[in-house]
Length: 335
Image 1 (spheres, helix red, strand yellow):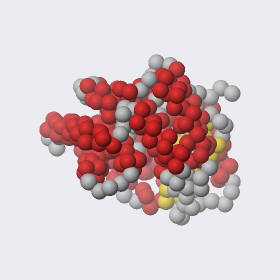
Image 2 (tube, one colour):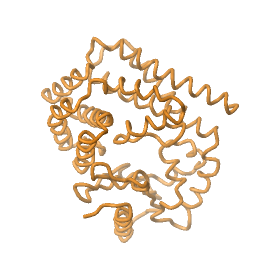
Image 3 (tube, rainbow, N blue to C red):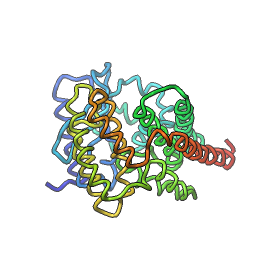
Image 4 (cartoon, rainbow, N blue to C red):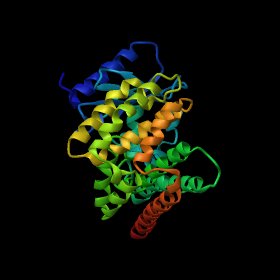
């Protein structure tokens, strides 16, 4: 089966039509994510991201459904009230960009979504709104850094979980100045391009060191891939498994990382590996063997308790770089 944007869009339309034939309270449906881009595939896999807007409170906020091993539906469910103050979504670094895409509507009752899109896309790219989207990440990164710097005793795995979340927020502070928030699979593919566009190419190297890319190698990936896959498989069998690492998304991450590792983009492999493994680790907190595997992998990247102060200082400098870029942005645009 040849997977392309046309086929993915048709698959999405067919799924929406099927759900609309059943009793429903669906007001609108629209596409988001990579399926609306020119290159939806990575490692021969992708997901079809959609948002369903409901009149009533949805039973779940997110669901992942299998289409094939290579393709899955990743569906967010919103109550219609989420869009009441829709102009505020101009400052949303995720949904805002999708609402500016006027060709992604799959279902719309009485042109309601068209009205919302018109309101969001108007002035979406003003300096005030661009800065606000980046500032949200900056504030989150700094607050989480203070939490990391708290001397309370927590498990090292939990500390590293917050460390990676903070690193992601700090990177998005910079990335959000010229695009949507970074996605997991393309995190280290897109960030260098965004940093370069701001004249801050050196930050790509700083980010790479923050996530352990200076220790990454093809041999290390091949050595640890089985343990990573085992963690994802084990977590997906748990009742509290988050949708992001559902069994339906196994190929989405594994195949993509395999392709990146065997191609010329080894630098992009580690972030999706870390992000999904840390999520699995939280689900498998009562599994000693799984915990030990995760800690050993972190150790192989030189993430050990003895280096917490060094990691904090390096992360502090990276967040400061984002602070400085935002300060210069404000000065340039008189904000």
